[in-house]
Image 1 (cartoon, one colour):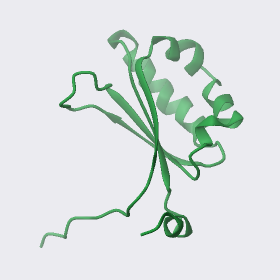
Image 2: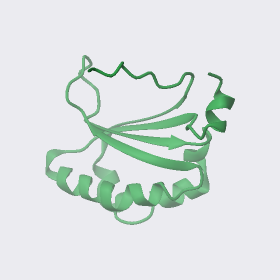
Image 3: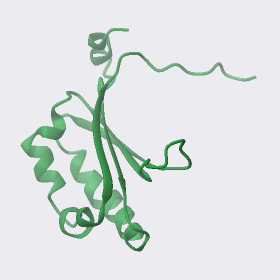
Image 4: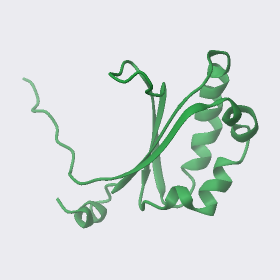
Length: 122
């Protein structure tokens, strides 16, 4: 399935992966501010349609960050916009959480194929 077809079907053609670690003593506040303030601000940015967050269960790499956010984007440049920066710098995230984050990684991926589901079990 071509990317153009994905866009026509309203499936996001890009995702922005944000990975990071936070010291244990800041973890509760990190999750509260991320969920209650940061994500709701970011998903209001034009071109960002959704966000899902994950916590690492296990990895084959020792340096994999503990937290992952996946933002669904309409275009790959959304995280570089003034609106994204403004939303990212608003509220408690920038002064209270960002200084404590480590192992930060940011990556934009383009969708190249549709979702394949396993057959339903009967």
